[in-house]
Structures are given as C-alpha cells and as structure tokens.
Amino acid sequence: MSKKIAIIGFGAAAIGFIEKIKEHDFDIHVFEKSKDIYSSSISGIRADGKLFVSTEMGGDMYVNPELQKKLVDYYISHTDSNTVEKGHSFTNEKFYRQFYARGFQPITADFYHIGTDQLKDVLYSIFENFKKYKNVHFHFNQEITHVDKSEEQIKLSNGEVFDKVVIAVGRSGHKLVKQIISDYPELVSDNTQVDLGIRYEVPDHVVDELNKEMYEFKIRYKSKTGYMVRTFCNNPSGYVVTENYEDFTTVNGHAKLKDKSKNTNFAILATIKLTEPFNDPIGYGSYIAKMSNLLAGEGKVILQTYSHFKNSKRTKNLYRVLPTLDESKYILGDINLAFPRRIMESIIEFIEVLNEIVPGIADPDNLVYAPEIKFYSNALDNNKYDNLKFIGDCSGATRSIIYATAHGYMMAEEITGKL
Image (cartoon, rainbow, N blue to C red; front, top):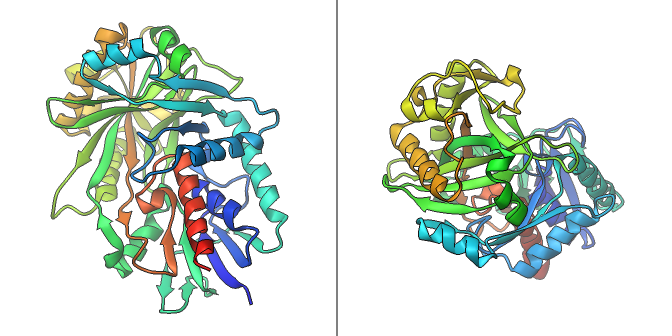
C-alpha cells in the first residue's frame, strides 16, 4: 500500500517537491486554501517571476548552481515560446569595481525574467501536468489550521490522516506555521530576523545603464547604524503594487514582459537581527506594517517624495515622477511617523552613497512607498521529526522562487532516497 503524503500549500516549494516525487510510489494530496488554481495567491510565482542562478542570495542553504539552472529551465519550458528577459548582475568588472569602491558589496547572479503576464499560464501548465498523474490529488478551498502529530502518523485539522506531512505555505502561511510552532516549540532553531524598508521608484533613464547591463542590480551596504541594507526585486519599466496579508497591507513591485511603464522600482531593505528575549520577527514586522496602514487607511500604503522622506515632512503633492501604483492604493503622507529612526537613517545613507555612482537616484521627487517588509520565517529544524517537514520560505531556509523550488526538490530526493 502506497504511503500517503500531504502537501500543505501549492507554491514554488510544492512544485519542486511534486516534480521530483510524482513518479514514485506515493499517494500525494495537495491542500491549497485558495478556491482554485486561478485565484491561488502564490505570491512568489504570481508576482513578476524573477528567477536567478546564484550562490550569494536566495536563502541560507547551499543549492548547487546546476540544480538552480535546471529548475530555471523547467519554469521557462512551461512558457509558450521560451521567451524571457535575461541579465547578469555584476559580471562586468567595471561596474563591480565602481560599487565596491563606494563600500557596496555587489552580488553576482544570472537573471531570467518570465514576467507577470506569462506567470498565470506557466502555473496553469505545471498544474495541468501534475494532474495527469493518478497519484497526485489537488484539494482547493481547504485551509489547514493545525496538525496533530503522533509517532507514526499526522492528523490534519480537516480530520484526514497521513504518513508524512510537508508544509509548503510560504511566508503568507505564517498563521499555520505559528500554530505548529506553538504546539511543537522544539522545531524552532532561530527566529530573530526581519527585513524592513521601502519600495523606491525612479524614472527609467536614471538607472537605464544598470538595467540594460544587469536587469537586476543586487547590492548590500553596511550603514553607520550597523544595519545591513540591500536592494531587492528590481523591476525595469515595472509597476508598484500592494500585497495583502490577512490583517495588513504592504508594498511590492513587478514587471511585465510586454506592457511597460516609464519607471523602475526596487526595494531598499534594512536587515534587523534582534536578540533574546525577542522571538517574533513576523510579529514585529506586522506591527510596523499595521502602524503604517493605520496612517494610510485600510488596504493602503504611504507614498512620499524622497526629499520629504529625508527631511521628515509630509508629502502633499508630487512633481516630475508619477506613481505606477493605482491612486486608490496609496495616500500621500509621512513614513517617519511609522518607522523606527535607525531604519530611516540607514536607508537614507544607502540612497545618498548610491547617488555618487548613479546620479539621480537621490533626486528630491523620486518616490518612496512603505511599508515593504520581507519576513524571514522562523528557521525550523527539519531533522526533528521524520514525518513532519517544512520546505520553501516558510521553513526559514529560502527566500526566492528557485531556492524554494530547489528546497522542495531536495526534500523529495531525501525522502525517496531513504526508501
């Protein structure tokens, strides 16, 4: 009799896991809280579809670059015409030296951008392929709220019992993970980190040279405050969007393959590592997000010009740079009322130093949106239990599409290799 495996959540990590295990003798059941494949909020795959090959970013685990490229090719193979935008971050020595000389740590990577407009089709194509396997079963509109673990089996909140359960809910599934941690606190190995910052929007011409050379420029910078500040998710000719969690709203960005704007947006994030007795990074980030939403109004984010952001003044009107975010999603305001000052100082220092290399980055009418938060899920110990595993971003080990997919793939390899 085939062993029964439950996968909770259908995102990048679940895709990697299913792809590797689908031809083995397991009865696989996927539980996804969205009502169907079209409404599924698989944020990492839905928004932008930026894939990369790098050993310097994407997670706190080693993923062989050959496996990374294999998974990039896997996603691209599910597009209609294998059409993607490509870039290489800091393989050009001239740019590397320029940034390094100003104190930045340039991150090398190869980028492959599928585009938000192609992602729905890619996801549907993968889903249709999995459905062809008689041992793979999808259950939509099923939110799992807790699991009860015994020595041999695990019972889900819907009453079904499985030999093994794989949690793959991403960062948006933090409620389930929090409940599991509450029931089994010994799973947590580290929980002290959160990235908090802004989404920055500038005219394309300001960063045109970098966009053409790299598509996405990835840099880190140690500020005078001691915080490490980094860029994340650069979107040439892209769009700013909001991202709705269950009880707060944050800002994000994406780019389409065909439909282009005149602005580039990217995140600037300060990494905050706190020490004991602090043990709730998601709670801390959520609190600041809720404070921002309180000022902006429900479902909205704060928008401010850079000069006002820097000088702690409320923005009341805009000038040359017009936002790509729909005006119903933001309010002109002052981010200083919600963010801790050390974070503000770190971001301002980052922008001012970057302006020495990229003139125009610190122009007064560039746009600052907040809050942009990247949650690092609690780092969980996957060696603690044989029948309960965590893969992808909810495990705390990954924070990108390819690393999450690889984590799922490697976990399936581990499970099948033990038999």
